[in-house]
Image (cartoon, rainbow, N blue to C red; front, side):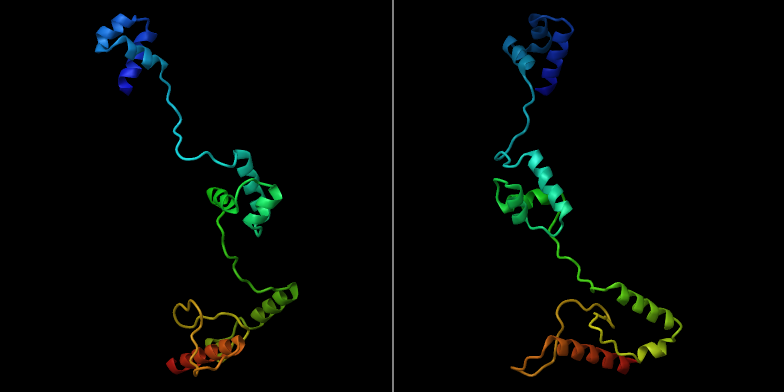
Length: 182
C-alpha cells in the first residue's frame, strides 16, 4: 500500500490525470484521492503525559543542582500537579537514578596531613614489620578474598555484643587466622 501511495503521488506530481494513473496502477479514483490526502499520523499510545517538556527540564535541573534532594521536595518546591512517583519517573528518564552515597571517613585537613606524614615515614618498612601491626581504626580490611555483607560473629545464645566489640572481635579473629596461615 505504501509503495502504491508513493507511486500515485509521483505520477500526479508529474502531471498525469486520475484516468491515466488508474490505468497504470489499476486502482479506483477514490484510492487515488485518498492517497493524495493521506498523511502519516504520529504514533500515540497510552495516556497523555501529565508533565510538559518544560516541567521535565525543571525537575532534572533541580535534581542536578541539589543531588541529595528527594522527589517529594522537588514536587513541593516546584508546585507540580503530579505525584512523587511521576517525579521519580522523570528523573529516571533523565538518567538520574536513586543511589546510596558511598560512606567515606570525615577527614579534616589535619587528618589528611597526619596520614600522609605517617605514610612517608613508613614507606620503606619491610613486609614483616607491617604484618605485626593490628589495625583497629574501624576501617574495613579484607585479608583473604571478598568480604561482603554483615560480619558473622561467633557468640553464645542471648548475648548481645556492641558493634565496636563485634568489629574488633572479628578483626582479631581474622588477624589470628592470618598469622596461623603464614
